[in-house]
Length: 287
Image 1 (cartoon, rainbow, N blue to C red):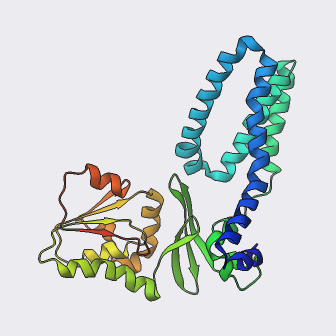
Image 2: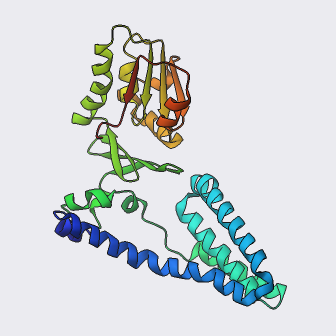
């Protein structure tokens, strides 16, 4: 897809139309099939079962959203979650068409085995390469470019997929493919400046809040000043885990007793906390 993105990259309308066409080709068939499920079930069940079907459908949607976002994806990953959902749907369809319990058990077991062993494994390097943003910059073959370097960290959570790659002796932390921090070059200088600039303008910064941990360099730089308490607000626990890979340049801020890691959304924390801060630093440097 990289040539197509490069071709449409200079036109907002062209890029939007190309992305819309990709989404339509991928999601419309799935959406149509999902939309037909409830009407078909109602037709099979008959008019007397409409209320029960609507209730089950509502409860299933709520339970599925909660389980997928908060349990399955963080612990099993998106790939296995999708395969599991496919197996469950196949099992439910089998149950609706089965005449005997033995037939149900046999076909359901086959469905689950097929989902577990017959589907090809996903290419995590390509999926987390940020093609939606970086494809126009690819110079090598699109199949080779995402595999440059070595992926040394991969975690999926409710806030996104967090990766750390080592490319040419440099580490890069990315969220959903978008690189948010590195340990070299201009990025490292910017991450330090984000802390030093506001701290230099304050006479005696004692209570400081950093929103967004990323590599931890900004938090570590803030701790080089005589602060009494540093609250680091990070929405993704996976980012907090990945930040330890940058301990060689960030000064190990999470190990400092003055640091308090708060796993929450930054805006929510500031709206609800009673703490007054001398400085509030928003770590993402590209608004």
